Amino acid sequence: MSTTRKPREITGKHVLFSLLAFFAVVFGVNGVLVKAATSTFGGVETTSSYKVGLKFNHEIAAAGRQDALHWKVEGKLSRDKAGEAVLDISARDEKGTALPGLTAKASLAHPADARRDHDVPLNRIGAGTFHGVAQAQKGQWELIVDLYRGDDRVFRSRSRVTLN
Image (cartoon, rainbow, N blue to C red):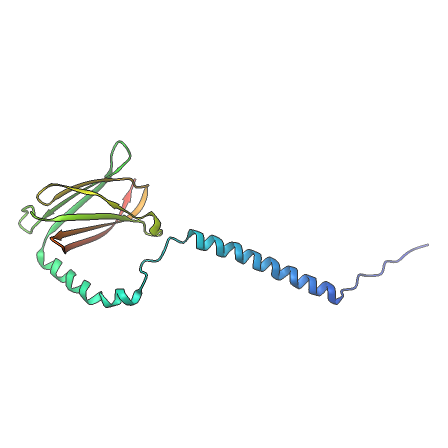
């Protein structure tokens, strides 16, 4: 006696459950990816593009004034024996004379994650000469150096550096 099996029928319930299972998997995977993206996002470069746009002409004028000074500002970023990042800055005029009366601020900005940015505390060693030490991981950084005379920023440098 041979029994032949009747082929399975696809009913409306099977189609409904298959569609619900498919979309549940899609929404679940999307939820995991959204959570991963938002938890690893280091922030935006600017919080308001409009406000930055309003300051654009001011920044262009400041860059023109900086170029007219013909200053030579050199920075050296290296790692000491203790593993700390050491920054030495020298600011001189076009004749090579050290620039007195300046204060300096420096920071290391991570190119992809604003949460890893940090300031480099600087000490004035002499006229136009500054020294600072900070903790920084290996990799590429953007070194931002600002020189001030009083409360006015007179010089800004942004350089991509690699710290070993």
